[in-house]
Amino acid sequence: MSHSPRASRLASAGHALVAFGVLTLMLGLLLAPAAHAPNARVHAESTGGGGGGGAGGMVNLTVNATDAPAFVPNGLSAPAGDRVAFHLVNQGAYNHTFTLSTNGSVILPRSLSPAALDHYFQKNGSWLNLSLPPGASRFANVTLPATAAGLAFEFVSLVPYQFQAGMAGFLNVTGAPTGPGVVLGTNATQSLSFVPDLLGAQPTHYPAAIDVLVTNVGSLPHSFTIESQPNVTLSPTSFYATFKTAPPAANVSLPNPGTSVWANFTVTKPGVYEFICEVEGHFANGMDGYLYVGLPVPAVSTPSTTIVAPELLEGGGALLGLGVVLVVAATLLGRFPGRGSAAPPPH
Image (cartoon, rainbow, N blue to C red; front, side):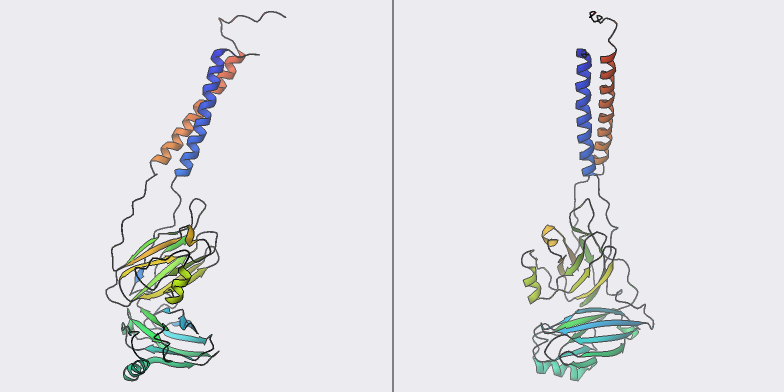
């Protein structure tokens, strides 16, 4: 049975509207705002992570001495008033020491000679001063006074030229339990990213203890690695070489979805510190961010799709519905000719 010209025109228009409606719906879905992890905060100085709740608790901290030479990690955190149980491990083949300064918020210059560094600790004393022969594992306890809250205490190796080569770190003494921090994640609708990827902290003095809670809300393994030097732009092809000469301030791994880890570290000066994900291919695909210390966080304007996407979805649905109606109408019109139509000749 042949359709009338009118029915054919209706069918063509209906099919075109259905196709256009489907395309509009797809565009609206692509532009629909993705679900983001909740916004985050960075806590500096008076807050901290790393265990313990203050007021006489116990914090267990493990520090590895390596032949880089370096302490891993080189940023620690514990609440004031707590007892810190240190587990010190020499993972290298050379002698090291773990010597913790008693002077908070004092940054020892790397230009100090080994003799001058020894003299400083002889004059000012230390919380701990333990020798670590190759392969040694030592334990020691220190109770942090309440007056140490908000201060950072440097620890070094006194073996000649190890401190000068970078073997040092900071113990950040905090005054209250930590709150939420930066959220790290991937989801099905976005490329690899940190959410948020711009953070800000406004310390009142330096060195400043900064604690960031990193949560893996995606389905892939991630890391949070932040540089120790401000105003240095990292490259996806050479960041390993940069970290070899200037180890990161913090480097925590989140191998499993849903895991959270505190990144506790110390900054010695204001500036912009870049953080990245070291998992292969993630940084190269845009997984990095910036911590602004002592500087205003720049406002980022991104195209808003909160109005466009709903309009596209509604318009696409309307076009699709109208197209279906026209196709149905054309089908019915082809089956039931109008009054003025001539009857088909008899066979």
